[in-house]
Length: 384
Ligand SMILES: *Cc1c(COP(=O)(O)O)cnc(C)c1O
Image (cartoon, rainbow, N blue to C red):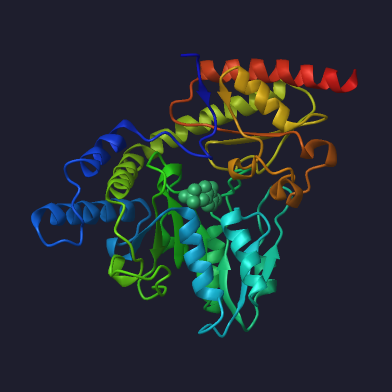
């Protein structure tokens, strides 16, 4: 097989071998329904209980505060819809940011059509929102503050602790979409004043189609999917036992390797940033230089299309993304780059490279060399 260098860990991560091993029995012989009373079912039930403890430990929560979902999108929808849809909710205003993932932004757009009101706080030039800007938007009828833990395009870490303090001061629930951060940086929901937190297994070396919603004790949301009594009656549907087992294993691995992986990946990130900045002119690092995810690099190259660069790198077996993976097919530019005020000539030339614990220096040297060649080639074509 031709060589492949995978630099798109923000889009998804490879399930760790231990994760796959942990999942296999539940996809074959141990196929019982966790709600069933016989042993075949009960062992699946125990598997879920064990995984619940493992994911709870990853974010400093109690096992009984964890609810399994189909992923980040469902967890986000659950929170926003529960807090803002009509019917029983009297307060129908929420505060979020202009740089959220579309799981938040498109849900907000839909809720606005249904009569909710949403204030979008804009970040500074490095992608950080200011807690004072959030405070200014607080109203009598504010039902929710939802701010992502870390941005999926530019990696900027948001001031979650300050926002948690602010929310507590005003008695407003605080949700964070932490899909990019869970398993990558240490998180303690208790210290941070988080009411609800969304996460997704496939972003931390677990399987796709499986995630969780943390709900602080006493802040359980009403059921979002109605049906059976799974997840204490709050999330109906037969559990994704294999997925949950895999997510538990992924959480355990993240706990065990986090500090070492963080230091290693951060070192690789800074090596790539320095390498690109010294090899190529007309580049701009998007996002905050220090307050960013250990694995995120996002560069804009002036006078070229990021999409073209992506295709050329793919010819070399290098997987990168121009903006968020799920919007790669859309013609629109990135709402995040626009929000942070990236100059016009840089806006279309963005490339996101997100590293993993398996990324080597040698791979990065090759990436820098290929990037340099393609950037020069594309600029020459443009000026010809
Ligand atoms: C990937 C991602 C999501 C969506 O998670 P899925 O499990 O793929 O539905 C939501 N928010 C952020 C910030 C993400 O990066």
